Length: 436
Image 1: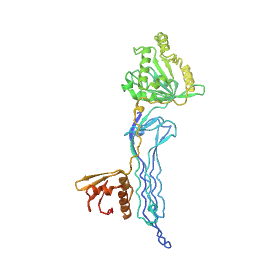
Image 2: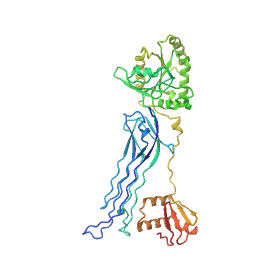
Image 3: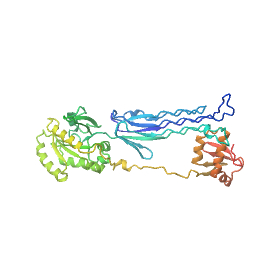
Image 4: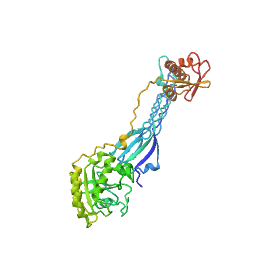
C-alpha cells in the first residue's frame, strides 16, 4: 500500500535537572557550591533518505520522543546532553504543524533535515546562583520541558517527468515499456491507485525518473475521484507528458480529453499549466488514430503552439525512442528544480509568528476564600525552580514583590494566612512579602 499522508506526534527530550551540592574535600574549608547543570534534551530531527519512497512506516509508528538530558552532578560536573532522535523520511515530504498550519519544512534533497521538536534546556545547578551576598545557595532549576506538537506529513512524489491523462489511456503501459517498473495494468478505470516510479534509460547515457500518476477525471481539483491525491504529485514534476488516447477507444474525443485534463490542472494550481508539456498521442496502432491525429494537432496549435504532439504506440513501441529523446532534451533545457508556487493548499495555510508580550503581566482572581494568580513568568519559574529549599521560596517572594503581585493581593483583600495559588503551587500570604 502507498501512503502519502500521515500525522505523527513528536516531543523533544526534557532537559536534565540541575543539582544542589557542596564541596566536601577534607582540606578545603568552606568549599562552597558544586552542583552542576543538567544536560540538554535531545531534538527530534526529520532527515531525508533517498532510499525511502513512501510514508508507510508512519502508519504504524506515530509517536517520536527524544531522550531527556542527564541530571547535573557534584564537583560542578555538567550532565550529559541527550542525543538527537533522527527520523528518516522520503524526499518530497512537506511537514506542517497540525495545530497552526505553519509549514515547518519542505524537504526534497538527500540528507536535508529540519528540527521539528527542540529539546529542553538543562536546569542550572546551585553553582550558578552563588553571589557575594549568598555564597552557598541551596537553589537549583529543573530541566526545561521539550517542545511537543502534532506534525502532518504530506508526500509529493519526486520525479523528473509525470505522466498525466484520463484513466486507461496507457500511462502504466508506457512506463512499463520505457523502464523496469512493473505497474499493475488492466483494461479498467483506476488501475493505478498509487504513483509508480521508474528510471528511464534514454540510450545515450542519459536518464531520468518518470512517474505514472493516478488517472484524472473532471472535478479532480475539488477532490472528486482521486482528486488531490493525484494533483499534489504533479507539482513536483519538471516536465509533464500528457498521454492521450488518440484512437478514442473509450468513446471520448481526444481533444476534449486533453482540454479537460489541462483545465483541472489549471484550476488546482495555475502555475502547473506553465510547466513544459509534451503530448504523447498514444494507441497510434489503432485504425481510427490517424484520422483523429491531424485534427488534434490543428486544434492544439491554435491554443498552445508551444506544445509538441508526438504520435506513439506503447504496444508496438512506435515513436517511443523519439519521445524519450525529446523529453530528456527538454529536461536539460530547464532548471534542475522547478519553482513550486503552491497556489492551492499550501498557500492557504496560515503562518503564526510568536509575538513578544509583557513578561511581567499578571491577573488575580478569587476562588472562594483562595486567591489565584495567573502569570506566565511566575508559572514558568515554578516549573523550573526546585521549590524544596528556603532559598527558592525567597527568590519567588522577591520576584512577586518586584512584579507588584504583593500589592495587588493586598488591594484585593488578602490578609495574613490567606491561601494563594499559582498553577499547582499553594502557599500562605504573609505580610512583609515572605512566603512559607
